[in-house]
Length: 395
Ligand SMILES: [Zn+2]
Image (tube, rainbow, N blue to C red; front, side, top):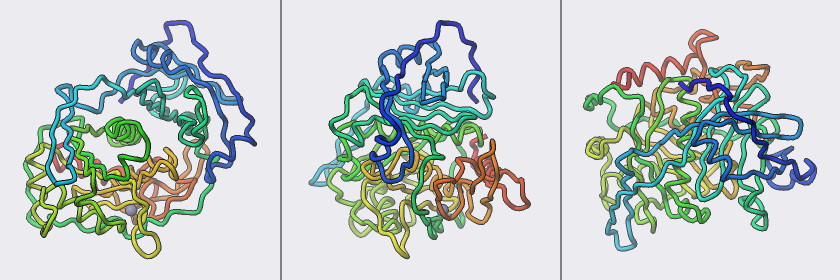
């Protein structure tokens, strides 16, 4: 849990409103209302590293957050594996400086508010969850290549509007549930994951793959940390640079290919013994961030997750998909891995916002970043997930 930190320095005003809402609406078809602000990434980074408050001014909303480093990479370095065109692998240990931060909104209940930011290469990216809404801040260059590097698009999730995404039967049966007796990891606050990237994800933009995956897991951690008491740590990043294995645009087939990729057996892979590969990597689960546009219709779309299993994937194509959507889809699919179920999802109201909870089988713009918590009988994914984590040694 994040702790409330007292203000102990003068506030620094870091943002200036620039554009009218009407102009900003054109940036993305799923955003009804947005705004453009200027942010000084260097000041934000300095304040985040020294625990000083940071002011964000969004139209008539002013939010002060206090951030502190929240690393999602191991201290000893992140293992990066890149599979080349000829199938050979290159392994390196990257000891990069921390880029992920977490905190709260000053003056709000620390159990309810949350801020998650990635600051890397002079660029800020993240969200603030507050009583005034769930605000996402993304570099404007993602939406407009001509934008200045200090310009950011800001939107609240209540101002999103898009056709519901049907997850379909995306919580699929895991291969190795029967007789599954994995080694019990020591009680740990951080659950280790290997993040996998396909070729399309690598080339979504020019920023480092490991930075984008760190940003995603940091944002997901903002949801899981509060509600389950556990977060995820990336111990390995594995990249199929030429899609030697990760070829399919069908989520189910792609998930099977992910298992083969982890096994290191792209050809004639027989699923059934991948958990041993994960165990030998000292990770609990694998999550593929795919840049492919996954097949829609009756097939799975946007993602898939093995129920109570250890593999899953989420579509993360930044050119068409907002940070808010990427966060929700990844959190949903990882939820399947850890005991979350569609039938145990609920419709609840939180701080005056009513919507379906995270594991609902459809993703509406109004879905809440919240697991059902037993308000209605049989609807308690939060306990399901906590129980699953406890049963596997993560408490
Ligand atoms: Zn699902």
